[in-house]
Amino acid sequence: MQTKASGAHPLSGIAVHDWPCDRCHADPRQPCRTLRSGKQRRVAHLARWSTAVVFTLATRWLPRLPVWDRLTLAIRAVGSTDGTAPPAAWNDVTALLWQADQLQKALVRRVVDDADPYVDVSELRRPGLHLAATMKEAGNLLRQQYLQDDPRRAEVDTMVLPEHEGEGPARLTLAQLRAARDLGQVHVMTADMARRAAAVEAASGSDTVRWSVRWDPSGRFDAEPVPDGDGDRPGVRGWVAHPSIVADELGRWSARPRAAEVGWRGAPPSPSTRLCTFTSAAMPRVTEEQAAAAFMARRDVIAEIVAEIDSLRRSFQQDRLREEVAARADRLQAEEPQLPDLFAPSDSWACTRAVEWVRTRAVVHTPDEVWGRFDRDDPEQAGRWIPDRTAELLAVGYADVPAYLTRHFGAHSESGAVQLLRIPGPAGPLYTVSAGSRRAHLCRVLGLPWMFSVTTMLSLPRRIETTAVTPTEHGPEGARETAALWRGLLARGLVRGELIPRYSDWVVEFRIEYALAPWLLLPADRATAYNQRYELLHPGALADAGIPDAALRSPEAWRSWLTAAIATPAGVGDRDVP
Image (tube, rainbow, N blue to C red):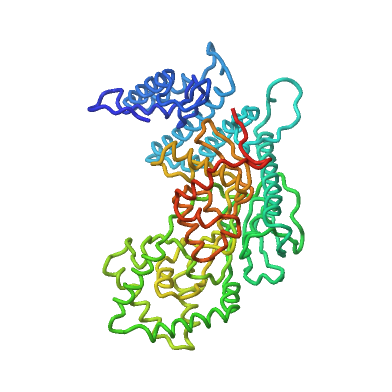
């Protein structure tokens, strides 16, 4: 939030939200809120404006001084506590620690840069920045500790603090606060997964799928399906923040998401006091041998592709190849336009992937959002790519098709793997493209029935707010409508969980335990687009799940059906947060 003024007025461009508010205790970068209701204020408190004006003037004047004078002033400001009042409250200490972080980082940069012409002190950079980061962490931990009794506190900020006698929070070390935070994260995660397991079992019945899993203490695991008649389950490589998440993730790798039963190969996971940390080394990877085995395991699929290519050879006229490809792309765009993207993942607590043959028609979104067009490239070059690859594909001999597919679509192919995001649904998944957009367009435009790819599962968010799925331009009214749709989904039994209002009636958090499909959480227009496409690909699947055909006809019909006046089932609904 900045004021705008013409010219070089000394008060122009004051960034009010760069400073905390002493009146409502709003943190930097956060809006002021009214003291009674906690609603967001449109204008910052006068105290915050005063702070911003004073410090803006100071920061514009200080750079004109020589560096020695500036450091002398800083030392006098923070070097002595004689005659100064100590911090009045814990939030003053958190503000002090956060400001110390900024001061330390600025000091390190200044010292290293200014001393460089005369002496190399770059070895001071790492410990100096580490100290700054520790100061910031200390402020965050202190704030988290003192907000444990605040009903507006997010559940994921729970701490498991040591027992303490006396009034008020205990004075703890940073190590104790870190341990309390870590234990709280484990506590919340295991409780979330226990609720999810119960909700999935209640929604899908006692029909479970079994997996054999090898666990690594880093959080990585390899999972192989135990044969049970569901032959569509691939081997899965993954990373999770806690062992309790494994079953929840694997349950979505069936054609129809179900409860999963995990059997550990080797040593089972040991009890943990903290969540696993995701690093680049923990990223699940598929080996070339695993990819090759998955590729050749479906010879029936390869036979279907070969038959379709043979049919294309007979139908295409070589002298009109470009025109026919363009006509196919236009027809595909008219009949099955790409769907809008889903919401971005809210937190990194799970990542599971596999290599598998996917039904090409289930690919519903790519970075190039018009079929057959690649707007990010040179128009002439982009217009030739699919016709050129089509001519190349049709020229491949019958016996050489598997080798051609391996070269261009294999997980370790020349162009890298086609990478898809797997979106679970009640009768089979949908997919969106994250890498390999051109090859996905080629397969869809030509109508090839299958495509080999590396697929990454879309993890169902543990918690998500209305503002995360509602377009910004729709404003508070759009977020209120999203919250109303979520209440309807709960009442209809299509999702399970709890709605938690945050500060207002339009910022609502949904703690998700089960969802028939992730796209149901989207606003009415986008949810309807996904519903209609899913009905096209899996006729009757949504009706079997309890969604009438009439509700799929339009966003208005979907909105009307969900928000109809029906009783909320016992045990689900809103939790009141003052």
